[in-house]
Structures are given as structure tokens and as C-alpha cells.
Length: 266
Image 1 (cartoon, rainbow, N blue to C red):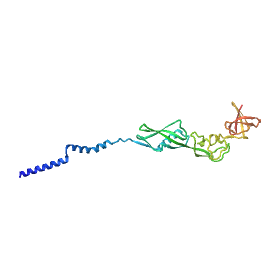
Image 2 (cartoon, helix red, strand yellow):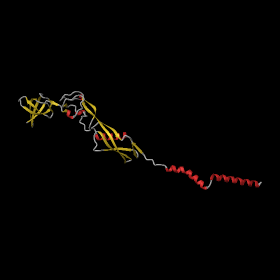
Image 3 (tube, rainbow, N blue to C red):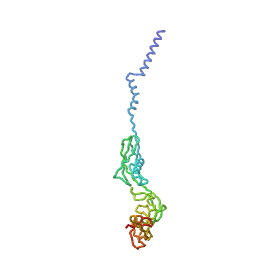
Image 4 (tube, rainbow, N blue to C red):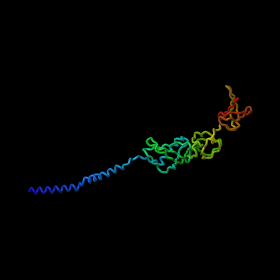
């Protein structure tokens, strides 16, 4: 019986040994399997690339930066600024974090129409790229125009005026944009309706007209002499006109002081 058990143990030991060897193989084959199992992990580690933040600057962002710059530069000379970016036509990629655009003034490029701009892209306090921009610039103002036909020397009232949008050809335009500069003055020339007003089109109002009866006053120290007269020309306050003294018939040069009042020196 003992021999039978010994024989069975020896057979089982041989089977276990063969199975173990068939699974493990030689020591070199084990290292190869182990190396192969680490291979994909090592290759994945080798292909990791550091990601760098990139910002996309669109033509619309460039347009807004230029528009803000020009509105600040021109102050109250214009009401609105219109910017059309011609170049670049596609977004510009800028390395870095959040990008701030700064328009650099160019004294050689001013005014309206097609212009070139240098726009600096700044990220994290550092200059990242200088963008060369070509843009078309237009501007609008609120121009004061007359609503009816005005004759020369006719007094201008608030009801004679309105404000309309007007596209200008130059920033230093010649048009009046404040109705307060016109009300109470008179037309210096005939003005058709819808005429945008310029400073040369208006003047201080006439306070006396040719043929008006006026009071002539002469002052010297504490002495004052007055006489009645008739004007021989139209006049504004501060202007000198000829008047006729009705008492003596003499013609005198007198300064217009107020409506119906002139002053002579002696």
C-alpha cells in the first residue's frame, strides 16, 4: 500500500512541475513578457505634450479696440465712429492667457478713410504679438440745420432749427453741432431749408436797421449829452455806424450800444 501512495505522489509532482514550466517558461521569456506589459505605459508617457493656452483674436475684437481708441482720441468732435476691419480677415491666434489689445497711435496715420493701425496683443502683462491692421474709418456728427428758408439778417429762433445725423469727410469738420451757438443770432446770407450750418453762416443779430430812430448819447467824464438821430446803416452791438443828428443835421460816427441807443465820443 505504501508503495502505491509513493508512486502516485511522484507522478503528481511531475505533472505540477511540467505545468509550472509551461506557464513561466525560461527566465528570459518572463522578463520579455514583463517588458512588453510595461511597453504601452512607457510609450504613453513619452507622448504627453505640455498644453499652452492660446487665445483667438477675431476681427470684431480688433474693430472694437480701434473704435474705442478713436472715440477717446477725438473726444466730442464726433458723435459716432464706424470701423470696418479689412485686414486681417481671419482670426489671429495669440499664445498666452487672456489677451488685451492696445492700439498704438501713429502720427502719420490720422483722420478718416482707409488707415493702417498697429494693434499690440498683450497677455499676462507681456507683449505677445503686433497685429498689422488695415481698416476703413467713418464718423458721424449731429449737425444743426435750418428747417425753413431764412433771409439774410433774419433772426434765428429755436423753431427754425433741428439736428440731423451727418457723415463727415474730416474730423475737424466745419459744422455747428450745438443749437445754443445759433439761437438768437441772424443769418449772414440766405439759407435754404436743410442747410447744415457753419459759423460763417450766422452772425450776431442786428439791433438797429437803416432808418431807425435812435438816441445819440455823448459822454465825457460826468457830463452826458443826448440827442435824437436816425441811422444810415444796419448795425450790431459793438459796430460803428453813421447816424444823423436830427437837431443839428450833422452826420456822426457812433457805436451801437443797444437797440435804439448809440454812443459818440468827443
